[in-house]
Amino acid sequence: MTAPGGTQPEAPDPREDRIVSHARALARARAAESRKASGLIKEFVSRAIAAGIPTTRLKARSYDGAARYRTTVEGWYLRRDLSVGVDAEGLFYVLSAPASLVSRFKEVSLTPSDPPMELGRGARDGESMPLPDALEKRLMAGADFP
Image 1 (cartoon, helix red, strand yellow):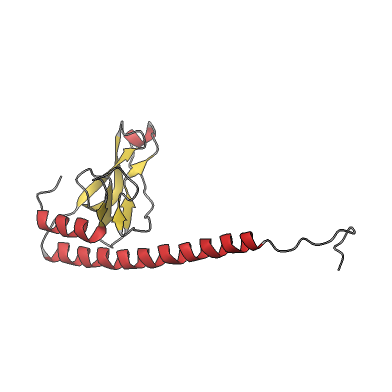
Image 2: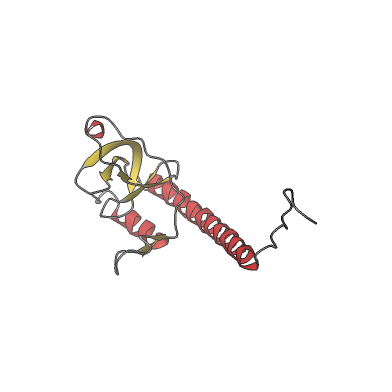
């Protein structure tokens, strides 16, 4: 059949189909990982509250690392480098924000992220940590955490 304008329609590209299929499978795997991580974080929140570990107002670091900003998020840091945290509702946050003069004087609003099962995945050796380990270490540290 001829397409409008007298041209033949292009045949589907099997490589394109494989790419789309792979992208969908990857998205499903990430969503499943995130659901599992969310469950672990909610369990952490329950345990932290039961243990009486106080929350703190989390701060975000500018992308270039030169500044720290107050945020609207109250919760717990999960890493000693203060790069990620969770709030009392079990939402996960990457604690970074664009550099801004206004942010130095006003609180930064952060958007929750889908939590990974490994914090710092893709970072330098020794900088990544499985989420269950990070949560357990945080619980064991109690109130003695930065």
